[in-house]
Image (cartoon, rainbow, N blue to C red; front, side, top):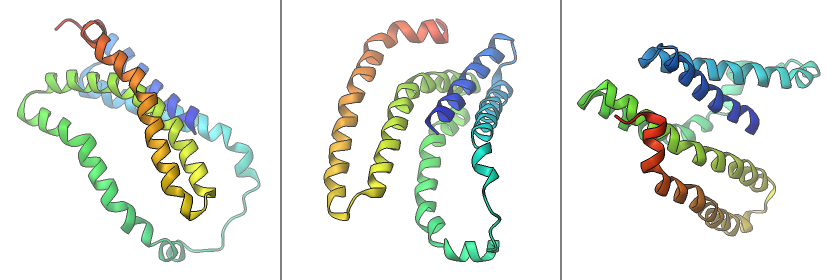
Length: 178
């Protein structure tokens, strides 16, 4: 899953950059690049999972029974998904409406540059965290979560410190002097 996620992020970035260099930029280039990255990740994941799919049996349960059994999941996850969607897209919408599409494009590219180290660190830690959390006894989860947060901060200091010190030089290099 981690390699597929990295492929999706990297493929999306490379496709968007390639489309921009080919003068197919703007919103259309961003959309096409995103679709290309997601398609590449889907195809790789589908290829890797071909052996798993062979031995799966068809379930006799109906969709209605599955919806009834897992009805609490959307109720518990829905508010979180809504807040996350507003968090990730709200700033973009405000910049696009209040200012301009060009400024939104520059902000989006800067945001992507800053998200890259965060996504790599977060992805690796989340996989370890959720795997260990799934087998852990109830009383020890708080200590494990607290330790994980501390380790995340320690691991994040170096890449974000570098970004802080190198951004005045790196942003014009990657995003243009304008």
